[in-house]
Length: 163
Image (cartoon, rainbow, N blue to C red):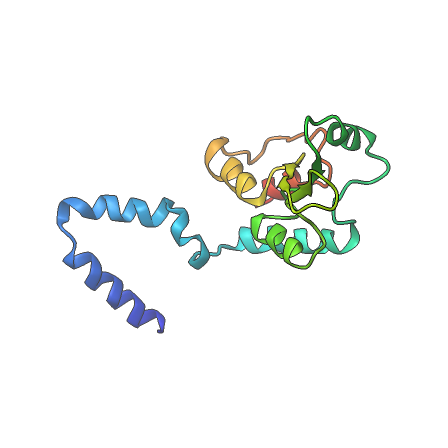
């Protein structure tokens, strides 16, 4: 469907909605996560491209030998836990890694048996969704201000502020 046809169809739908319900419908269209798959803005595409580039040059866990604290936190967890960088790997990417056998959401409780339990996941990064929310909704306009990102492992916060 081209733009003119889609616009016409949308106006048709809106004209058939009770006038008192139109503001609720428009609010839903603006804010609902149900439409995220259809509404890609440039910031989403930019963050996705940065994450893809970084994934290509980092190990799956995205924890380097120079980050002993991240490794230590993972090892101190009450149950077996793996580190998954939320900026690099959204839920869909984790699902793909699990399907490819590169990652698992479960661990064996008794080696050799079929008895398994869910593996804990931890991230030390904001996800792209969290970054967009933070810089587009939660924080005031940062134009003309200096932002210091202390401790951002991969620069995700700085990528987010640049949107």
